[in-house]
Image 1 (cartoon, rainbow, N blue to C red):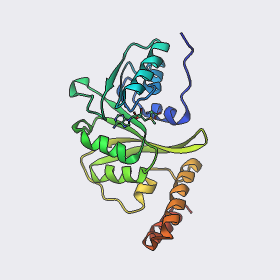
Image 2: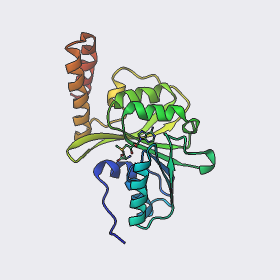
Image 3: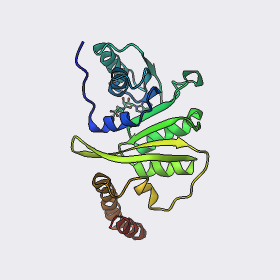
Amino acid sequence: MDKLFCLDERLKKCASLVQESARLVDVGTDHAYLPVWLLKSEKISFAIASDINEKPLENGRLTAEKYEVNNIEFRLGSGLETITAEDNISDVVIAGMGGEVISAIIDESPLTRNKSLNLILQPMTKSEQLISFLYENGFEIKEQSCVISKGKIYTVMAVRYSGDTIKTDDAFPYLGKLDIKDETNLIFIRTHIKHLENKSRGDSSLLPLVNKLKRVIE
Ligand SMILES: C[S@@+](CC[C@H](N)C(=O)[O-])C[C@H]1O[C@@H](n2cnc3c(N)ncnc32)[C@H](O)[C@@H]1O
């Protein structure tokens, strides 16, 4: 059997937010690196690797075979439609997709409105849209940070359903629960500011938000 591979910093951060002994579903698993790594390192003992496309699942089956992992199920379908209440899932990872796709996956499944479910989300784009969706729909970020992986910056968050819609200001979707004393988090927030500044050239109504975000990180 091959020696266990290393996860990149992005997936390592997702893995660190998975609860010990979790029953995990990895939505959009592709090569199933995350569930296979978690099973091999014995942090968890059951996982479902789910994907909307057959080819990524084939890749995932090859990874599981290569590392002799048996306690993993592969399921084909969109989002969480592959999961039933009987699967008794405790943790869901949705990583490597756009913020709007992640929002739709959460919105479309009644399973996500469960206060004991740990949702680990890693949007590739539009994290601010995802955060707005979460707070408008009774979800709350418990933990959030940023990592640099292969020269790119990513944010990763652990989220729970509380059922309460928490009112936030216009800066919150860009800041989330990031600790602004952390240099990597600051790089991420500055990227948002730069993007908004560029947009404000054609839409001056964004300038107060740009200035607010600048003041927060000053
Ligand atoms: C870029 S890969 C991410 C793989 C892995 N999660 C990661 O973060 O490295 C995106 C995967 O999500 C799958 N995908 C896209 N939309 C999906 C959906 N609605 N439901 C399930 N899987 C989806 C794609 O087929 C692809 O395998």
